[in-house]
Image (tube, rainbow, N blue to C red; front, side, top):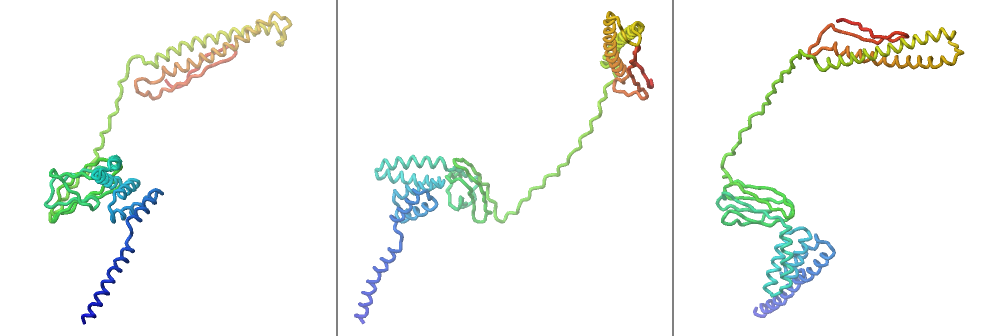
Length: 336
């Protein structure tokens, strides 16, 4: 029996190292992962590089691995994570008297911190054992009920919970470099009745009062249109009279020429100027008569129009100039 037990013990002792060797061969190597992560990082494959560098860092917390991990996270705009890793590299490098690496890491940390979003959470009346979590991560408030966290740009969730209290959740979104303050209201007990806010009264639109028409008082004096009517009437009379005179004079001249030139055939060349004068007088007289007639019609129309905003029914007047050979004037018709 002793020999059998000894043989079994020896076999077991031989198998244990073999199992450890096989397990070690199956486990990823931190250095190999680091090299693969750096290669992907240099090629710009940040989505693939960051998880591999994180895996390498979990196996071996090397300063070089963490620095490359921070750089990869910065490329993906994970500024809050990049800041934490850069700052940790700064602290570790300073303790190892690596001033150059500490300075570079510190500078990169400040850049990442400035690009991250800063959120200040304030709990006004915390419930017993109330917990605050942002994106599932527990955050600790100070004695004044405040907590400040750095977050990456994008959507986030804030959750406040406590035993026997209703949960409070607020969703929010951040941009790079934003500074946001969030107040957490007092949590309501789980058994408290739901408070229903009264409905606001319906909005009743009050109809506007119709504005009364404002009627200007009738002006008993002479209006501007009447003054213009008198001016036009006078001007038209002068022009029509002058035109009529020219037409009458031209007509008389033509009758005299008709006597001296039977059948409108003149052999006396001295009569030519009289004929031209008569022609000119006829044209000018006609123009003056027409213009004067227009002025007269307009002036009489303004004088006949009602004034002071009142309408006089039954007063309709029409005017028309009268032009003809040897005569001129204006006719008026209608009801007065």
